[in-house]
Image 1 (tube, rainbow, N blue to C red):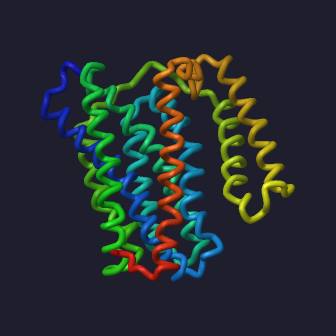
Image 2 (cartoon, one colour):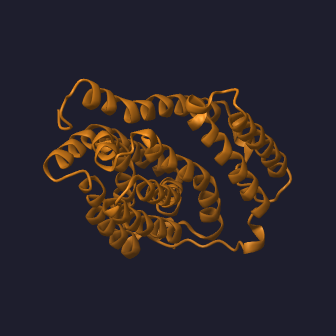
Length: 302
C-alpha cells in the first residue's frame, strides 16, 4: 500500500505498535541491568555475571545487519512480528530459568530476536511515512530510548524488590503481545520483487564468523589475558573473517552492509558517536548495579 493511501489513523496506530516493539527491547536492557546482582546471587553465577549482557549483545549484533537486509528484500513487517513474538517467548523462558547456564542460553535467544526487532523497528518507518515525515518520527523513536533509560532502572528496581527478579522478564509479555496485535492489524506489508537468490549467504556467514569470535575475545580477555592463545586466536580469526566480509561486500549485488554509506561524513560521524555512547551506556548498565548493590549495600530500588 503506497504511503499516500494510508489514513492518519492507520499511520498513528501502526506507529504506536512499532514504538511498543522498540520500547520492549529498549526497556529490557535497562531493567535487566538493575536486577543482575540479585540474579547472580540467587543463581550462584557471579563468575558468569557479564555473560548475561554479553550473550545478548553478541547475538543481537550478528543478527541486526542480516535481518535488516532481509527486511529490505522481503518486507519488514514479518521480521518485526517474528522478532516481537520470539522476544516475548524468550523473555518468558528467561523468567523460568533455573540456573545460570539456562539463563545465558535464553538471553542469547532473546538477543537473536531482539536484533531482528531492532533492525526492523527503525527501517519500517519507510513503509508508513514519506521521506519528508520520517525525521520527525525518528525523533519520537529516539525519545523511546530516552524514556527507557529513565524508567527502566526504576521499574527494574521496584519489580526486583517487590515481586522478584523474574518479573523483569515477565513484564515484557503484556507489552510485547499488545505490540504484536497492533502491528499485525495496522502496519502495512510492503513487499519487493527480490528473491532468495538476492541474499548474500556467503557475506552473512563471514559476518557472523567475524563478529562472534571478536566479541567473545573482548569479553574473556580480562580473565584469560590479552596475550593468551585463546584470545589472540579468536581475535586473529575474527579479524580475518571481517576483512573477508569487507571484500565480499564490494562484489555482491545486494550487500548486507553498503560500505559506501561511510563516505557520507554525517553518517560516519553518527556511527562513531553512537559507538562511544553505547560503550559508556552498557558499561554502566553492567557494572554500576554490581558496585552499588554488592559493594555499597544499596537496595535495588534505591
